[in-house]
Image (cartoon, rainbow, N blue to C red; front, side, top):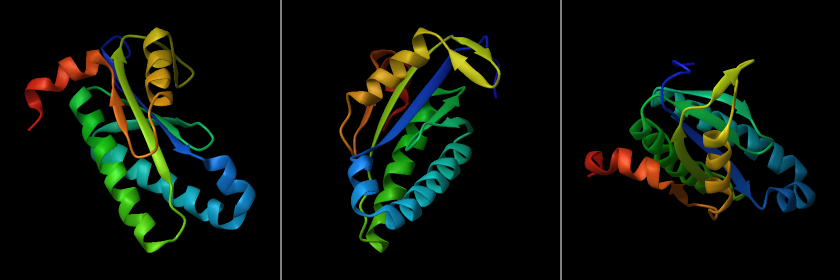
Length: 144
């Protein structure tokens, strides 16, 4: 993990409608979730992030640079669409990003910023990436 005293960008993901998938098609959902986890970890790592933990059917990842977090979220959404095209079980993932300085202990983060990132993600629909105003301001001049 990166320097805990620095501004951290938090990325939360969650699979929309996962409970229904588990109830209707548990075997296919198990395979789809494993694929989801692999895609998320790969995209986070490719954009210089760290997966802190899985959250049931999502992840919490951290980045030292908010632009890396945004790029990872876009990459994982695109990769999941491609993976879904090969498998009939469609996973609609929602993503939320926020940045701030929080406490770090026991390989986890605690505080207002990480909590806000989770709330930003919970406002999204499957297939969406929402960023807080903080992240938007930090990456605005770096977006195409």
